[in-house]
Amino acid sequence: MAAEAVKENSLPGKLNERIERLASELKVFLVEPKHPALLHGDLWGGNIVASDSRVSGFIDPAIYYGHPEIELAFTTMFSTFGKPFFEAYQALAPLQPGFFEERMAIYNLYPTLVHVRLFGDSYLRQIDETLSSVGF
Image (cartoon, rainbow, N blue to C red):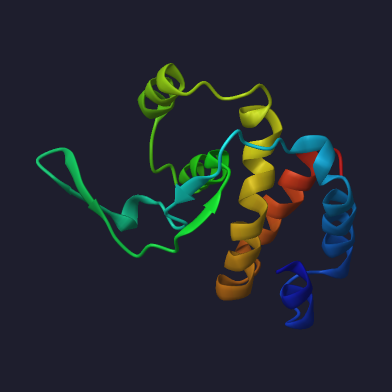
């Protein structure tokens, strides 16, 4: 996605170089799940149907299998769920250390790059901050 954004002049070369350095070190940050999970792939407030304060459905799926943390991270991009959700989630399936500190931002890097391509440079600062937060 970064390479495509560079081709379209949406992503500056310097940021791409930092992304490439991070990509070469991902195994240091990411952990394999015990089992892959079926992910919605585009889980944010606009794709959740609710009625009477209850979730009644999810729409616009981009379904794939992956680490459950990927979906959890994506929900933080647009503040889909708050602290009570994450507390309840962790009571059922505790997150491994480092999710909130590093992996959440790393998992959100790809959808942020998609947003750079689709919506422009207003997302570049978020990419810079993510890279800086993990030392790149």
